[in-house]
Length: 358
Picture 1 (cartoon, helix red, strand yellow):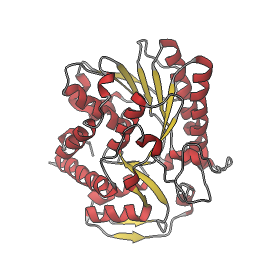
Picture 2: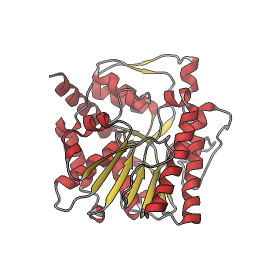
Picture 3: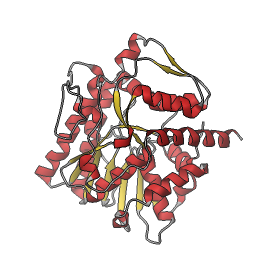
Picture 4: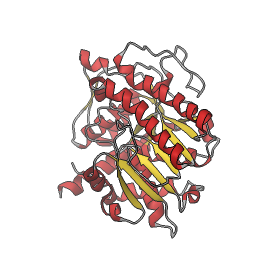
């Protein structure tokens, strides 16, 4: 299904509402911001917010959209691809160099393989792209004098813990180094340390965000994360199939809320600091999430036993909820609780699907 997000009135309204809460975004006017992974779940939402700003203001923000496929970028952003503020950069996180000879004021690095199935199939590429991809960008930032690089990390850096409280940014649990599934979390940990190391040794200003479980209509139809898979099942009128008891607690955040949090941290976050991205109104269990989606889509919720291969791809954290106190102090607030966010996801996907099929 080819998705044209801009045909959805609800999506456009959601983007506009979130943009209205970013009081500091005019600081980016007349600046150049590079965004890697720009067609992904989170970063395409960031690009949409910046596009909305540019379309409603006289002084624009130059957006360097870094991604592997020009066709995919054209399909995702449509008519905006040819706008004077939109610059496409062919980019692969596995490359050792950034082939862009112009100065960039800000970098948001979101290119990463976060799909559990792909992590299991490509653990080497997952690790190398997470670390060497960031290394190349930090070298580039050092050379051209970038003001700040924001690294999008993950809540999986925290590992497993025994207590039930939400994770604060300074608390870490156990990660099994000899489990291939942890190629993602281990390389994310290493990349965070690399950010601070570059700041210390070379003066490259960095800041880190750790999103919880992000969902929304910008997710790929091939995304195997259950929040994405189930949303697409719902719009196809398929039952939601749970492969566990669903007691695992997660911090679910609507993609536009996450995008706004990242922009907020980029602009006003303290350098060298990590920020959890979590909406206190959306800390729920996987089962609760499944029930919301089933209700929104008017489909059945069923249980099945997982296969051994499916078990290997499961996130081992029983409670990966995040404490958002540090982010909230910056003035960020989520617009979408779990019920609204997942309901909007289903409604927008259905709207886009109907447009694509008409």
